[in-house]
Image 1: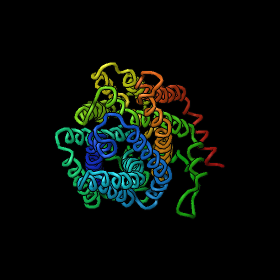
Image 2: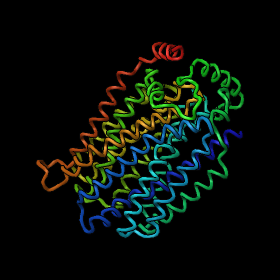
Image 3: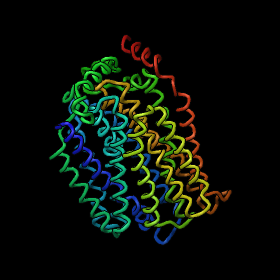
Image 4: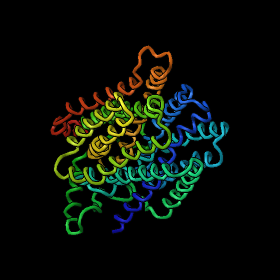
Amino acid sequence: MKDLAGLGNLFVAAFLFHFASYMVIPAITDVTMDAVCPGRDECSVAIYLAGFQSAITGLGALVVTPIVGNLSDKYGRKALMTLPFTVAVLPSFILACNRSKVYFYVYYVVRIVAGVFSEGSMQCLLLAYVADQVGARRRAAAFGLLSGVSTAGFVSGTLAARFLPTSSTFQVAAAVAAATAVYLRAFVPDSGANSFGDGACDPLLQASSCSAATSSSSSSDEDLLPMLPPHKGALPSLSDMVALLTGSMTLSGAAIVTFFYSLGEYGLQTALLYYLKAQFGYSKDEFANLLLIAGAAGMLSQLTVMPVLARFVDEEILLILGLLGGCTHVFLYGIAWSYWVPYFAAVFVILSALIHPSIRTKASKSVGSNEQGIVQGCISGINSFAGILAPLIFTPLTAWVLSETAPFNFKGFSIMCAGFCTLIAFVISMRMRGKSGANEKLAIVQHGQA
């Protein structure tokens, strides 16, 4: 029961963190435009600033996230989670004080620094914490629940932003972020490879089946040889991280799919809000409505659909279904012919929300308990690397097709390009299906004997 209470407290902290983080998103586009290009609906400078922020944040997270994940394997999750929970307070606090041009640029710099330590690391540590306490056979459902709780925070934060004035939005976000950091330190117990053994009881299972689940989990972990050699130093090298990902067919496939899907996902995020503002005149309320639909669909999927489906099909099938919905989702945005089409496209998040939990489950099942942090950190690092490339590719492309000098009238062109990235990930996931079995075990054994 203590483990279950710890997992519940983690879910509460994850909900509050995402509530505070996502509350500011519907308002930040208008704040940026007012500070940089007041009185205009189209502004290339604002688009480039957003793209540069995403690229620098992704570059920093690419370096920081695997290190944070590995340190959490050694020193526990809670100590490392304190950093992203704390630095997330600062950006919202700055805009809560003032949203003038000077304050905006101060926020801009602080937001980049905070993003380096919070965006990738937060997700990595949350997933590793859950993997510490949940057996492999229930991990897909548990990761789906974590994503659902995070999405519930997104929905709640967006709903609050829909009815709060801009000034109050940032004040509430800063207060909730500060309260979340305090809650983490006070109520979430520590976890990590040293805190919970391989045979730790799965708190999501019934007490009567706990001992059986423990035995199954222990034997399953014994089949997984360590993918990294023992280290005398504190951190593995870059070559060790590459060896970790290439030493397993499952991890290699998960890394490739993560890269292409994340490239398309970040490309969509880079372009979407500015595209909708230019194409249909969307403002804060319309952005909030759209995000609410997408968030509600994702929350429904992760809290109800995924736990049910995970009982009958494996994570590979869930990944394929999710990528199919993700492709449809992005392409509909790109060809939107009326203001209501983006709302309809957002419904397909009910499928695309399956993608990240499925990938993380595949990666988690490929390593033992002492490598959960580093493997989740590596996957988050790849996600961050895609976050670096996407703004470099899609920011100038979006600014170009939305400008008055565009050679053709197709404002959704950059979003269609993002859709082709998700399509590549879908094709790769289809080719991965059924190739992990015996070949996967052989690759792991050979790597362990090397």
